[in-house]
Every structure is written in C-alpha cells, then in structure tokens.
Length: 463
Image (cartoon, rainbow, N blue to C red; front, side, top):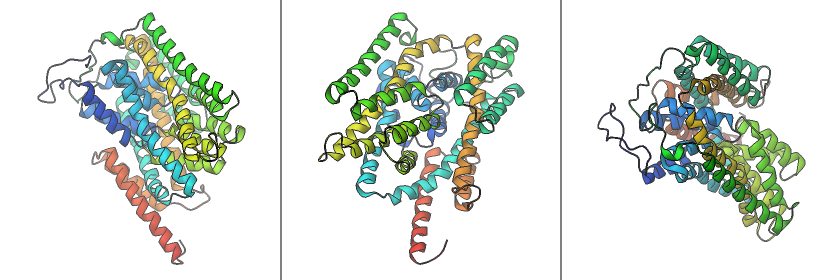
C-alpha cells in the first residue's frame, strides 16, 4: 500500500524495504504512547526514528514538511506525523498517524481527570512530573542543538536564529510575527543570496549521513500527493460536513448556548485562530475557559497543565482535561452521570481542537509537495527553520527558569531539578541515549524524591 516501492536494503547504503500500512500502523501506535517532551521533544523523537534509524524519509523532506506544519495553527508535531503518514499511505495513513498520536493521551487524560475530580489529589503524578520537567528542559535544549546544527549552515542563518531568540525572549514578540518576518527575510534572501538559503544552507547540499531513505530528496511525489483542484475541494467539503454535522447536532440537542455547543465553537476558534503551538494557545484557552465561561478555576487549569505534561501526545491535550472538568462541573448530562458527562465533554473538545489539523494537512499537503526543491518556496521555509531554532531555545530557557526556580528567582533554587536536567542533557548529547529511557528514568527519580520529601516532612524534618 505504500506509494514508495523501493528495493530491499541489506545495509545502510541501500534503501530500506518498502513499509506496509500495518507496519506503519504499529509504529504510529507506539509513538502515540511514548511521545513525551512537548512539540520539540516529539519532533526530536520522530527525527531520530524516521530520519536516522528507520530512514523512511530524508532529512530535507522531513524539514520541508515540518516547516509547513510550523506555519499552521495547532500542534505541529501531530500535524507532522499526519503529513508523513499521508505521504506514505494516502489519506487513511495520515488519519491513522495523526489519530494515534492523540488517542492514547485522550484515554489516559480522561482517566487521570476522573481521578483528579473524584479524589482531588494525584501525588504519584506530581512526583513523576517533578522528574519529567527537568528532563523536558534538557530534551528541548537538545532539540534546539540538533535542529540548529543541521539547519543553520552559515552565519546569516545563525544570526536569524539569534534575532528570533532575542525578539521572543526580550521583546516578547508574538510567535506568528516572528514566523512572518523570518519568511519575508527568507524570501528576500532566496532572491538576493540564493546560496545562503538553499536547502543545506549555502554549503552545498550537505548530504545526510544516514544513507538513502524511502522518501528521499529525489523521490518523485506519489500520485495521491499531487495537487488538484478537485482534491482540494473534496477535502474541504468533507471537512465542513464533519464539523457542521457535529456542531449542528449539539446545537439541536442542547441549544446554541448549551455548554457542549459552546465548547465546540470555542475550541474551533482556538484551533483556527491561534498559532505557535501549545504555549501560544494556552493563554487563549485560559482566558476563555477560566475567565469568560468559568468552566474551571485557575488552580484547576494549572493542575491540568501539569497532568498534560505527564502524558504522551501534544501538550495542547490539556484541553481534554478542561473539557472533562467542565463537563463534570457543569453536569451537562445530569447530576447522576458525572463521569459520562466529563468523558463526553472531553471527547467533544478534543474533536473540535484537532479536526482542523487533519484538514490542513490533507488539503494543503499536495500544495506543499509541489513546492519541494523550488527555491522560491523553500527559501522562506529555510528562514522559518532558522527562526524556529531561536524560539525552541527560548522555550528551553523558559522551562529552565520555571523548573529550577519554581517560586521565581527570589525563591529557592531546586538543585535536584538542575542536576536531573544536566544529567539528562549529558545522556542525550554524550551517550546518544534515546529520549524515552531518559524520560522514564527521570520520572522514576522524581517520583522517589517526591515521596522521600513527603516522608521526611511527616517525620518532622524541615526541608
């Protein structure tokens, strides 16, 4: 079923064997359960598995797809998985890859949200999070290093990355503005300094060292990924039907002002109008869910963010928690069906949050594939990649600040978190340890230290 039939590979210098649909299905299912670390960590996992280890896609094609996903509102890592799945196995491959990226997190978060609402405390999760947060800090920093070392091939691109970092760190510039300016500079650079903005960054097409890939730089675009107006119209109509049918049913069943209907409409806007990944969406969600609709309290929102960071999948899956708490608290199905109400609301919120992401990829993917290798289109994306390196570095600094000084700089310095982050980065950088064992080890360490602190406090020891 693969659109990329290639000879069998007996060594790293040959192309890998063709990848069947069910082989890819198993990979996407596994990825859905281990995709920790936020977007940067998830992209790092996919790069390591798909570009370096399995060689299903070349680095240039991977970055080309990633650049497009960076332009879109919504979770870029989930959209990237959808794009690669679509490229390999048509629309059903994209739906499976993107769906399995979200499904495990949806089920896990519904379970954790029920524990949270029914029992009000999840110390084990807090302990695991205590270890995962410094690991995530290291993963994000390492992702900035990995992407930067490969994408920033000349001083001009390094300068763009540095300016992007300063713009967001010092000036608090919005992410969409940074992306727009980077794209404009890239377009100008592609016209006036084409060698600096060619794929590979101006030092020639620096050939990746992983060996040939199934979807290589020169692999022709498969028939299903070629652009056609009829295909674009078809996907758009299907998307409108999928959205309109559900929102129409909710409106008919509960009224336009019903909680579930308003959730569908609010999270549709959140999916369409917010750019820059989860950390750009969260302020909008906080403002609407906490301050406007009063679906949950500020503390519940913070606890939901903590739960979201402990589960696999996109960080924006925190909206699942928001939906569950709102459905439970608003008793949308009556006082006797609290668990069902929370589950239904969480599912509704997740559906409307991620539906646009699938449509963006399935409708826009053929357009993006038609621009592969065209400097007029790739140069702006090269500029965006450079800027994204600076943005990812800022995210690492943001994490480090809040993890190492949880009460702010005036509070205590968390030596355990700093040491854990340093060890995690060293394991990734020096010993090339996989991201998943790093997260698991740090989570276990955090859990043990957390419970040790609780025990010492119970014994009267002042920490």
